[in-house]
Amino acid sequence: MEGWWSTTGGFFLCLSASLVLQGRANTFTINCSGFDQQGVDPTVFQSVFNKKDFRPVTNFSIPTRINISFTLSAILEVDAQLQLLTSFLWLKLSWNHPFISWDPEECGDIKKLAITAENLWLPDIFIVESMDVDQTPDGLSAYVSNDGHVVYNKPMRVTSICNLDIFYFPFDQQNCTLTFSSFLYTEERMLLGMDKEVWEIMDDSRDRGRTKGEWELLGINKATPKMSVGTSLFDQIMFYVAIRRRPTLYVINLLVPSSFLVAIDALSFYLPAENENRAPFKMTLLLGYNVFLLNISDLLPATGTSLFSVYFALCLSLMVLSLLETIFITYLLHLATTQPPPMPRWLHSLLLRHASPRTCCPAVPQKENTSLGLISTHLSGLKEPGKLGGKELGPKEAELNGGTGLTRAQLADLWVQFGHMMDNLLFRIYLLFLATSVTTILVLWNT
Ligand SMILES: *[C@@H]1O[C@H](CO)[C@@H](O)[C@H](O)[C@H]1NC(C)=O
Ligand SMILES: *[C@@H]1O[C@H](CO)[C@@H](O)[C@H](O)[C@H]1NC(C)=O
Ligand SMILES: *[C@@H]1O[C@H](CO)[C@@H](O)[C@H](O)[C@H]1NC(C)=O
Ligand SMILES: *[C@@H]1O[C@H](CO)[C@@H](O)[C@H](O)[C@H]1NC(C)=O
Image (cartoon, rainbow, N blue to C red; front, side):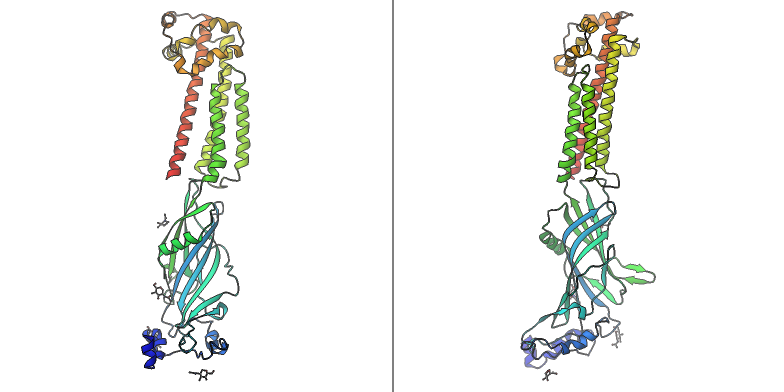
């Protein structure tokens, strides 16, 4: 086609075709003789450079169309306290400059030139959410084609405000918005468009963003609502950037140690209640847990309530509760063996119905004259239901049930039994909580 035009001498029309299409007869062809021999003569571009302070249009009623695309090459930081997302992107702006055109055939087949961007008019595209001044480096160039198409690439470190919700931390996803708009050109002066589809931007960002940091890019969506300020409408393009946190670091550094401590605390229920080591052991664990919580405070988000903090608080409360329970059981057992208080009837019948018969009687004579520590081995059998199950003590139960007055030894024994029942109950609650929290975390992780 080019050949046909040049043979007919109509290449001049071809160069200015875009201008003609817009209804303008003016042409601004650059005389490029000698481009390939002496380099570019700056004087031929001088007329273009002189007009750089104004929007390059031949008719000011015609809006300039700016095409925007970007590559999100890194997500540098997400600050939940300040609600800021810091990312790095390569912004590509392209537009048509009607005052630039030359014939590549005359110019040694040069179709593209890099021109210092300072000498050209640049659109004032900014990111609405940005909370930082634009730190574009100096001395960038723009590519100018012979048909007046200008492509301007610039790197940007964007600190944008983003509504961060850390409830599901560290299994959270965030949806941040980057809105591109013009500072001062309303939609009659400037229109924004895209020369790439969003999925292409997404793919480029995935390929470029090789960082294996904390955040992973999930997807990019766009919307193009107009922004109205006062009476004027501004064209804008909104990109929704969805990112997800990689939770491994937090799982290894927070969840695993915490789970181990809680598991040990749960296992310490197997220490016999009569053993005087149980309470100090739990106290040590509690202390250890507090030190752990102090250590991890840097890793947790500083503001907002996350499920994770709630989990830690629950674990801590549970450990405190288990310590309190141990103190209570120790007190109860001590009371039972020294001066057992009278037992309410309902508690008595409850115990007879639910407690295992084995603890009822054989241990009684020992209990009266042995220290708590020594009988502990006997009572530890309580925790394993499989070991219980002698039915031969049934008649003795009946005897107890029928008799209105209990001997002191029997009363003591019942109280001990009650203590163990309480112990067992709390142990079950503990296990239930553990199972629930583990399931919750697994479910959250998988969604
Ligand atoms: C372009 O410039 C050269 C010398 O600079 C001149 O000889 C030539 O006539 C010019 N051509 C046009 C079309 O103005
Ligand atoms: C500029 O464009 C508007 C609308 O397209 C048109 O009405 C007007 O005549 C044009 N002005 C000139 C000087 O071409
Ligand atoms: C902008 O993109 C659209 C759609 O891809 C394209 O038709 C148009 O020519 C582009 N305009 C500029 C100035 O790059
Ligand atoms: C992000 O939020 C916007 C609106 O707030 C919504 O249209 C878009 O679908 C969301 N993106 C994702 C990936 O959730």
